[in-house]
Image 1: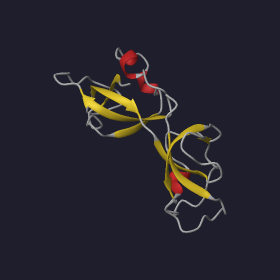
Image 2: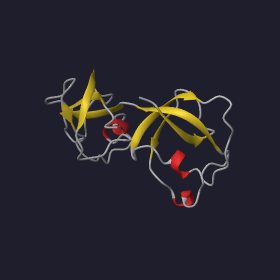
Image 3: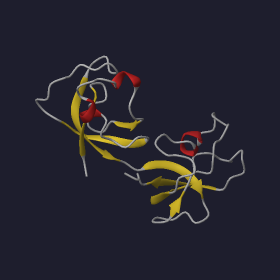
Image 4: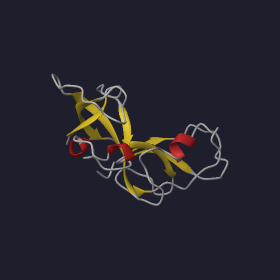
Length: 148
């Protein structure tokens, strides 16, 4: 189900994905707060539609202002333990990884997913992009459902 919200004009394109991090200090006193701050913090969203004929509103956070869009929470691609990783099961991230040059690092520490929280696996995508895990973890690349 989509939600109407306000986002920066630079992000206001169908297909754009972003992680909503919650209220910023500059939001205090803004007359549009209730229209902007209506998403779940630390959740990944995709813009599904930009409201036509909506005006661009001034914003202290976005230098180009904000526009009305429709967004939906989206699944996040992540590496989880291969043990018990199948569509419909629950999994959590294995933990932080210091190997930032690894091709799998973005999947071991993806934006929009919290360590220690279990998420339902929407789909198993297969092997992670790395040849060998430097932490000797046995991992599977999956799509985790948003909990929103």
